[in-house]
Image (cartoon, rainbow, N blue to C red; front, side, top):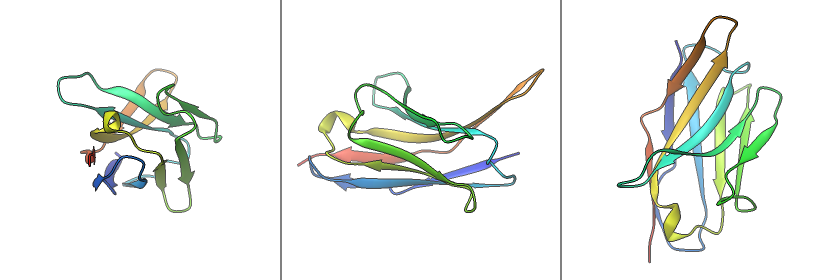
Length: 119
């Protein structure tokens, strides 16, 4: 079992920056693919950024060039650096850990952290 706890969400003005953290416990996540997802009111949850166990990253088109995902396996933590924030980035941001096995897939979610971009 893996427990994920996000932190770092806040109210920020347009153009500002935030860094989200996702601390994992219960098991090492170094072999997991990790990701950040977000869900705005009235919308479906969408992927923001992912990083594989080998460090390969992928981003949604809407955040490319503004957001950076990274991981520190020694700290069992994944980060999302968000720059040049826009009002449309407002959402609850969720951390995700996924491990694909031969016969099953393990998926874990955090409880979410609120990011609000507003003047």
